[in-house]
Amino acid sequence: MSSVLYDTPGPRARRRNVVYTIVFVAVLALAAWWVLDALNAKHQLDADKWSPFVTDSEVWTTYLLPGLTETLKAAALSIVIALPLGAALGIGRLSDHRWVRVPIGAVVEFFRAIPVLLLMMFASALYSQFTTVSSDFRPLYAVVTGLVLYNASVIAEVVRAGVLTLPRGQGDAAVALGMRKGQTMLYVLLPQAVTVMLPALVSQLVVIVKDTALGGALLGFGELLSQNRQITANYGANTIATLVVIALLYIAINFLLTTLASRLERRLRRGRRSPSVTLPAQAGVTDVKSEAVSGA
Image 1 (cartoon, helix red, strand yellow):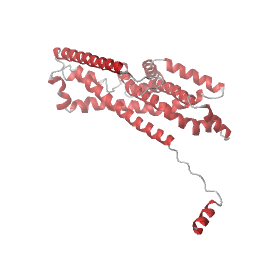
Image 2: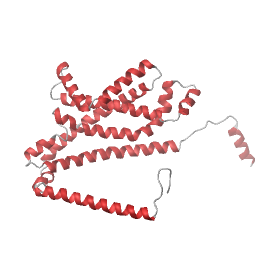
Image 3: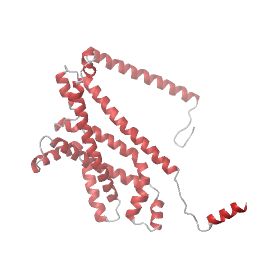
Image 4: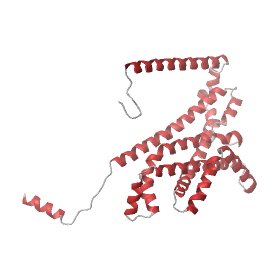
């Protein structure tokens, strides 16, 4: 099927694509064989490196599951705070009032420009110097603070871009009906922009889950990836096996998140394609229909 951006390949192009595919698969298989051979030479594929994850439940109950719990806790708190805060900042950037739009834009650009790891480190220092937060909870607070500040700024740009992609006539129609700017944004523009924004929002939520690992790198936060050090110290330097298992856990979490978001997006798109409109009964219509039926 041809389109503006794509032409249906002819017989020669199809043969060329088949050759390219075969060559790519062969190179990929060769690279995989080379990696596995190198790991085997270093005894990283030995059964004793992998067996603890199957035979020893303490690996899960002592290290992996507690680390996973901390990761999900930090990610959930960050998402719950960052989503509404980012939406509010995005709406603020669309304000007609310059005294609202300019300061919010400066805040968004400031926190969007700083690496999230630096935000976590600054937050940890602030909590240490100016609050009474216990050292046991300080890493969690610092991680959540850094993730919220950075991701709320990114989400604000996603919201602003999503609303601006809508046809201008949507807002003009709402104004013609007498709706105020806040009502137009809340009841007309945002519900339609959610479908446009959802893929970018899901990508940002996946980033939040993965960025919790930064807290374990420098702040001593006991998230999932940081458990690699404890496991390798207690189970015979099985670093590769541990990292593979941790990577699979991250993949499972993010796959579940994207799957739920995809289902939500499909439901929203179905709802927009098939709206249900209920028209009020007009005076006299029911009487006319009943008389026609009785006359028949």
